[in-house]
Length: 531
Image 1 (cartoon, rainbow, N blue to C red):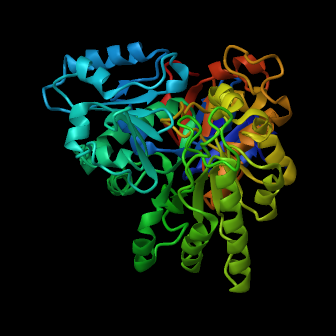
Image 2 (image 1 turned 30 degrees about the horizontal axis):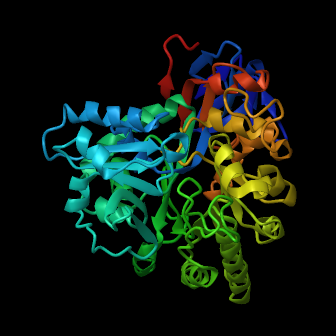
């Protein structure tokens, strides 16, 4: 047994919200209260640690991360720049140290931030003439490739757009280096895939970064290669982070054949939902819209799956105990997904099936008539508040007045939907304190767009935001009786904060960091001289 005392412990348990000390045994919370009483009641305590009056909260959960992409992305060229020229300079610098013929990979560009917009294959050819180059956009829904990469992928003037994708072209019909949605896979299939060992090694390097952010658990939305690496690490006793692992929709048949069900696994690795994509993203204007984008009267985005298709996949899934998690950003995509989930709920009831914990990933824009439907059908609102400050100018520009119901956390909470927050890393930083700041202020770090924030009626309280990073994800994972709070019987997953988040001015929340992070009763991270 170990006793942590002289602390201000925010349990997020409504019955006993504050404690001064916590007793931990066998990786779980044994008791909370004051140090004197706990020492009297448990004379067998062997370890004691004075936390020096620090604030403690439950371990934070990133409920939407691309773990493999994030881990490998730590090794990629940083393309999140203020200009296209700066991005090209970063590629040129990497090219100087890259052997001829080896791929140069990068991530993070956003043409909406660049005064001169999208780049071209020719520009990449100039700065990296000896290597194929492939740079994914911040949204992960577009990519920029050079001529050598296009050639290796077999993309030329005669190549047709794949279903659900688009190869952008110049005025002569030749591919110009920009790829949207499923067209990205043409190049990705030509890139030598990292082996399982390489992915596992990258994950091991990424875990400590997440611990420093107070993250003790994630919901991962990468594919089978990541799942294999996670299983390998787990078998070796080297998975020190709790993972809810989604499966791609195309694996539905395999999952059914194997009898896999949502919730299968243990306290560190379990199966979540089947992940499907209903549309694209706001940045490349491929999110599926009921009405055109404000600046493009012919563009309503790309609907990748309609409601009937989602329902047909979902019907097979729920028959076999698998929940759905559907990516939906535009108001049309969300409308189609909500139609499908309404049908699925009726199907579950008609056939005596359990109500599975289905979720919509992102829920970035809703039509007013659809705003209440997640709550009505008990669909989890899996949202990423850090997107709002990044996207607010784009949302105003491309969605206009419709943006009133963009990133509408308060609306969802008031209707009774359960919020489940994450980051979508590497699209955004996985730092949950940036997400909490966005949720409670609706502001960028510089205070823009103003003191009240962007559509301030959608702001959350600090407790509500924290619950969406703890209790909400725990419920989504089926861990609500073990995770998300600091209560007896729950996982001993906790974070010692550098500042008391409930006493810190809102503008200072992004500067909060973890001094120490515990998972399952073991300190996985401690700053030197933390206590």
